[in-house]
Amino acid sequence: MEHTYTIYAIRCKANGRMYIGRTKQLLEERVKAHLTLLRSGKHTNKLMQEDYKKYGEDNFQCYELETGLTFEDRNKECFYMDKYKTCNSKYGYNTRDNHSRAKGTIEIIKGLPESNQK
Image (cartoon, rainbow, N blue to C red):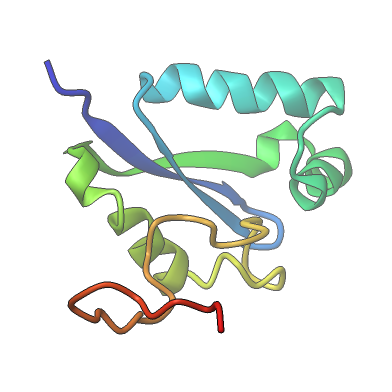
């Protein structure tokens, strides 16, 4: 059985910043994991942790953006990160876009490479 993914957002109502994530867990379980880390002051996302401490848990909401996605749909997470500009700390908590979206292209050459030895 193929796993399906859910893309979700965690939003701070006080300042509008959002985190976009993808999980193959139940969304409730993934959110619970975020909250456990935030409550203990150990979340790896320092900006989200600071806002949680400053504004409190009541100012955070979770949104299910899409569900039932396959591995091939994983780039949709990047779509939402771009749409909401969540890699910009003014708008979001995503610290870097290290997902599978191609940043550029590499030329594909047929045949074997030339030797670097002279």
